[in-house]
Length: 520
Image 1 (spheres, rainbow, N blue to C red):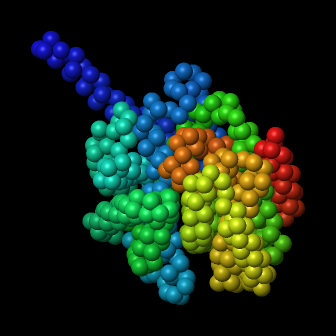
Image 2 (image 1 turned 120 degrees about the vertical axis):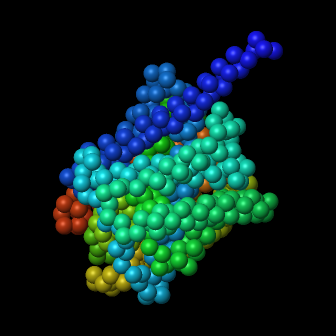
Image 3 (image 1 turned 60 degrees about the vertical axis):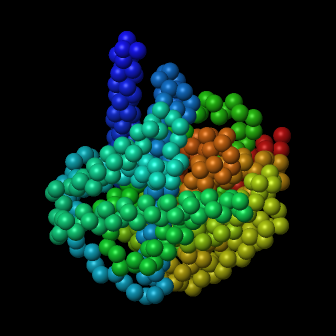
């Protein structure tokens, strides 16, 4: 026995080193990627999400191509933790969306927030000191909250990092609390820090309650955790509509989605070679790629035909109508202007109330192994009717802020139902399996809610393992998406109408080809 002690100590030392290696490697993968992306679009009106897509996919592919890791990057479980924290970033967005909705519907306003003045000194090209702190803090917050929720809920995975989740939660949250830009002007630093801790506590509670409700109701209907978290977070935001944001919400709104996407794209890029060898995956990827064009630019074409080509409407309108990850990140980060930034949380939340239909019908469909046709047709028709109503409202808005917001709320709800169930009906007719159809639909819309649900296991383990890649691939379309939005911002915030119609037509032709491919 004594002779084995050195061997045991060596194994423990290697395990401890593995933990800290994972921590620094994940930090090195994610944070510099976001900073480089911001640097490459500095001085332009384009979004950093575009660069994160390309760099993330390339890095993931290189890790596998050079033999450093295997598809899925199981050797980097902490990077997987960041990728799995999608629901944390969304919970923050839902909370703020609930606040904005309450203010809009009750015609009440929150007092002006003068508690913090950010430092504008550039620490890196395109990123100020306070913005850099937000990016770094978002990394620690996502890591800490994801670990803490899993420890309390008892869902810690059985990987090499599982036993260290309490330590990861502690490290992440402690660093996030103390990581404050000392050059930002903060009226009351103690109060500011307390607000950050309070926001962490509320987010943790919302995630845990959402998890337990999903588990409780699963024997009746397998609704995903994200559905209940959305309702709870939006409700909490509506109750606390006067709450001025502390450091937790500020950094998650600014950098939460870019950090989550960076981690997901690295993992997705690692599966490039594996995915193309799977049966039926070509049709899934083709629909995701061209569906991105059809549903995105088709929706914009409808809004343009209703008399608005302004990015203040198109950006948040399409972010909400598709629950679109890239546009959501671009809007909340301020890439499309202040008006779009204020409107985005509202539009992101509105269609999620329609997820009562989306997730309930999809949960039943997954259990049956095929799409529930009659409910899907009914919801798709309701979506078309609501979309038509929204276009009529937009035509009568004539630039009025309240009327535009009302029209966009109607459009976000209606086009979401149309795109989700219209697309699923097309894929069902093509003979695609429900699991592949869900991945294709999430990919074609860059739909954050479906992505989080599939990532959480709604469509089975195979889809959960592959969704990061399937979701990432259509982001290669995003050079076109963000190029058109960038050009529009340079054109006084007005989108080029003919380009929208032309790209929508290309998307329609591509989707038709993908449907034919799925039938072969």
